[in-house]
Length: 154
Length: 154
DNA sequence: GCTTGACCCTGTAGCGACTCAAAGGTTTTA
DNA sequence: TAAAACCTTTGAGTCGCTACAGGGTCAAGC
Image (tube, rainbow over all chains, first blue to last red; front, side, top):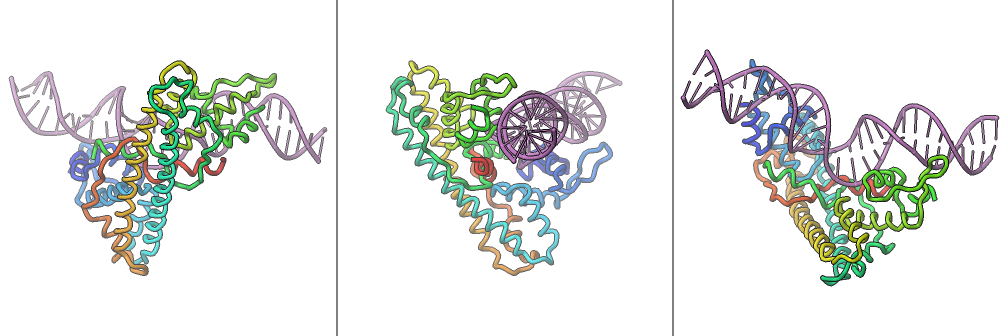
């Protein structure tokens, strides 16, 4: 099959597939006479695997590690377990941080009843206060951005 | 004061401060004879404001909006309230998504007791299965990345 | 046979919010 | 006086794509 059919079947898109090839997550497809990429069922399977991992918010690096283990079935899968445990830990920590964040945002929102002038806005005032220290986590991003991409095309 | 003292006081760092200047969040500092940026208490205050907003995971765009309202105190702050309400909504949605994600990851982790060979690894098998559809949110990123930066330097 | 439109290719630039490094100038300290 | 510590600008790198420019290929309809 050609790239757009692969994309359709995996609910991905052609540009992402080419990107994964460049990044070495998908093996290079063979080419037709006219230099079109030609894919097999094995490619589809692997792309679906990658997609599942991305849906679980794994990085491409983590996915690469998992793919290595898929490729060497004689090895012990303890590393796979470890990777997943770590990943779960990141998610749990991030949830905690976001809950704390929500609390702070709601506190802040309480400061300002509607209809005031900005000069008297309790929110702006609250944000000027030197409190609100962030307890550091790691490897876990902010509130904005990543899903928007996944959504439209999948 | 010079840039590194400003950075120290705001628990930020020099490169970020120059970046904020480029992005128009901080007004341009005056310069010493030797072309060093010289900052005032007003700059510090504004930088702390920005840092608080970033700690609340607001985007630079959202912060720019808030700064505009700080700068025009006669306006009604309804927009500030709206911005914050939206931001809270993003955070709440992201928490829900991550909780679902945690559930899926724990399910997956259950699939594989330690010490198996990768060939029999239930996790790798689970990730190959065609389930796990992602319910789309928007404007809210993955589990990895953003805090790591904030941490080291602040 | 020709055009139109849908597909494919490569290469490059852009997103957000920084971070880092190079290559140089200045100031402080020993 | 020399080294260390600071400052400057510029440009590139991070992550996981997405989008575009500028071209080639292919099938259908006239």
